[in-house]
Length: 142
Image: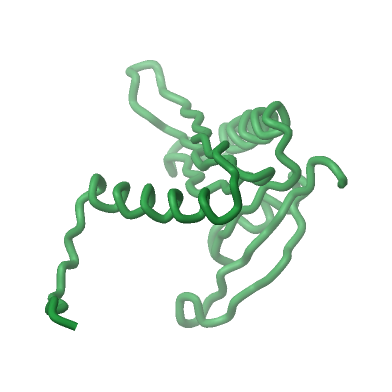
């Protein structure tokens, strides 16, 4: 190996996007699917400030819900449910079979379970003292 490895802990969002695109190109070639598309919904307050987001992507018959967030002051008013419902409905329109989401035990596994997501795995110690929970909602059966 001739290229030295050096620490670089400040990759920009554009650089990370470039890596994601390279990974997608490789995967697309490996399985022949070219249908990756982003899915995103936001809720804004009356001033235009974002108070909630649901974002992810669909590809190869699945959806990955990557970010789900509601401003702490706005929680408990149904915004999360509305965003999740919009996300699920869009996935269904795209003929997605399954939606996957990962959350931590101190975040929202119960929220997703109430929406019909099934707990598929829990990884203890991620982060230490807690677990990372992976859930899946099946929209259609094969």
